[in-house]
Image (cartoon, rainbow, N blue to C red; front, side, top):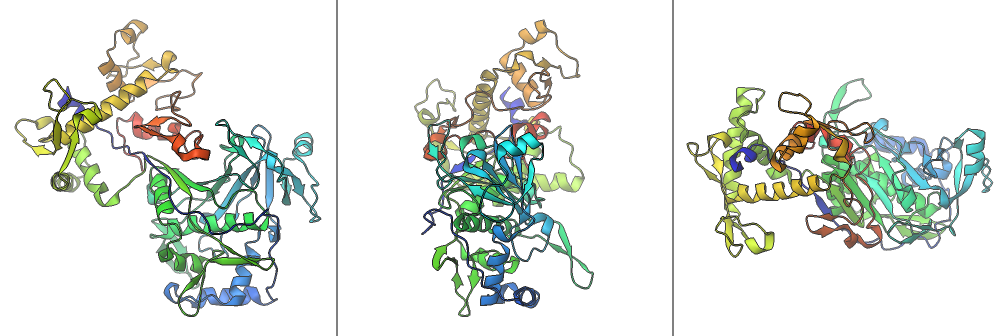
Length: 534
């Protein structure tokens, strides 16, 4: 059985970390407006600067800085529209540009969802008063309103974990897309976290295989690294800038990046590269607010609002990453290794199969070079099967094609531990499928099993069927043929591999998986018996 299961190992990884330093300063009440100092010819000068500067040589002129800050002041955006979502009691901002000089406007925008409790209404005529409220919008049936938020800084929301938030203290959730490190089109922010009192941000980003057209009509490839991160950082600066201006609610000190798969990797990288100057020139080239290159080659990361300088960070206070695709250096080897161990897998070409064989050998050598070991008592597994858990086991991958032909020759204590962990986690999941009572299970030929046959299934039978996607949820669950929502106990302060989300303090109730990466969205990876998320 152990050899059989080695061929269907999953490569899902959960990365959870609280990262990055808080900002050095923030507005006391977030209600001031930026001074408008740009001249009539600012737009023209800024455009000239964009067209003539190389990334490594950019110096931000005062007029350019003024243009960027005026352009990215949400109050100056006459096209901003807020849509009231009555079912979630939340206002959602239409997609607006996060930068002053977007290369691909469809991928460099941002949208924000604000809990309704923080909003008195929408100011449609610029006098600072709420002309349309949530109630009047719902009554009229016209829920999309052109205008600016009127923020109520006295209102409070108590989250399900007992934290009290206001419009000034609400944490901000930044959803990082970039599935498979590709581009991500702009999308409106979801209402996922509104009930908890959180501000939710959705942003697009450029990515691999993007193309653009130059002034001569020539198409060129763009979106290479670090464009994804640069765009996500620019969106963060945009939101923080408008929080300081009083255009948006939220705390600039508590931004949390979150995403799944490739987005999870970006959420992690976003947090660990907070305020890293290596990314500044890329943001400057796009016209991000709050990062400017000075004549001496140094950088300024401040904006001036009503005569006061405020530091704007492009980073995060924390990160919650689901199935994060890291580390990429070993990623190709690890994935090739797991595919190669499945002798039934059909590679696209003989070249791919041969490459997988080479990478598998390289991965074995890489793991063995790490000199890994584990105490059985710490992990709760009897790896050497001697009847106790008292030993310290060296973790290695071995090769013997004659003894292990079903895994193309690979075996060893490293794989034994991996299999034991996987089996334990899968068993926990199956034990917590409290909504699976009405599921239909199928045999290997696709025939639905009777109630009697399902009752006779062993744990191993059901686990194998689950991995292979041989089940369908009842209509009441709405989760056919896939992983479905997380079982009870896996939201909020759930225990993920011994790590409690309550370690995040105020942010312990993170809710379901991030937008675009819900468990339902993962069914393609799990349903086919593969756990490779990209």
